[in-house]
Image (cartoon, rainbow, N blue to C red; front, side, top):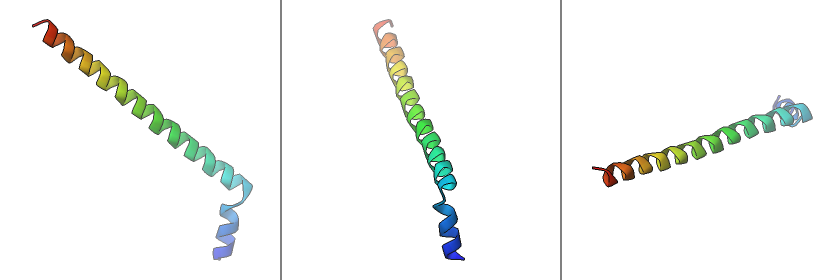
Length: 54
């Protein structure tokens, strides 16, 4: 049973699907981190403007 599952897991089709899923997850994580950094920069700019113009 274990060998069968191992064979299924390492079948070319499954590996391709697995890699695609990892790629999608990785892209999502990178996109989210970049987006959050941009948000932080915007917030800092807003705070700076408020301090400059009381």
